[in-house]
Image (cartoon, rainbow, N blue to C red; front, side, top):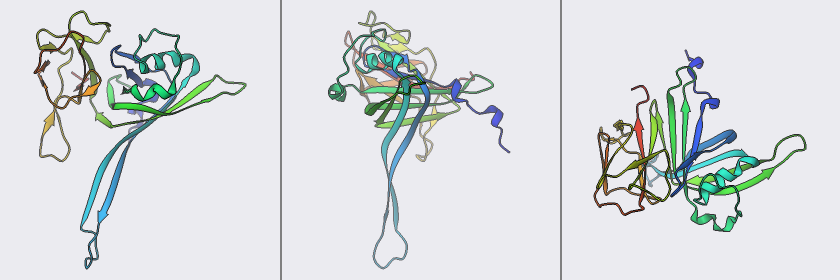
Length: 248
């Protein structure tokens, strides 16, 4: 029998949009944020065989959409344009948004315990549609749609965001962790999780980006220590996303 009293309510969800150089800010979603994976599947047949001989699958990234009130738009565009999130005056130039990739982090909290129920990380997001709607009796609302190269989900775990920088970066945020040489100590120790279908392999880092570009090598995560193989330059920004156990 189900236990709906412990479900994760949307009212307890939070979504952050993360820029290249100015950290993250809470995305004031008006009502619903949708995010879903896309897959391409194909059956391979051969003559003389009544059944397919192979079923293959390709991951095709993810789609997302959300609504936001027009009065909250400055926060969104400031982060898309990689400006100070406190900025409120700018020109929207949609033809230039191709160079404005961003990351989307969504965390849902347990309705009763307040602990993290699940989390989602969408990488290399781009907007694909923005439409405004207004009614005489309601506020102006803008609906955004977009695509991401990858969406990672955790169940029973959270996703911790660390902004790893050299001391005295160009822009300071509350998520900053400073390098000492080529290593930094994360505020939460990552949790090692098993990967599906690969013989018990585990990972303790979901994603690491250097200056907005995903890195698949050149760094290690051991315990709470994050280390890079090359001494970081003065204004390098590493965005590091690690799974963590909220019950500890």
